[in-house]
Length: 98
Image (cartoon, rainbow, N blue to C red):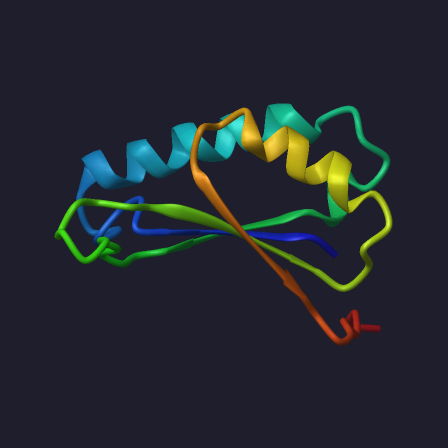
């Protein structure tokens, strides 16, 4: 199951503006993967946080977590179109609920 986490994109999910901003990003990501066979397996997580570089400039990023590296490059290329930094994390395993 690919998990697409977004860090530093919104600082809080308490404001309507933040919710709208996260919803728009969710829609863009959903469109990127809508024709893929694994579409229903993709999860999207917004981690409310403030992410900056050492010059205190905002630096939000996407973290792509995968337990299977098959097709990883294709997923990565789709996410690159969003124009954000991307971190890829290889999970040891994912155990779906029964």
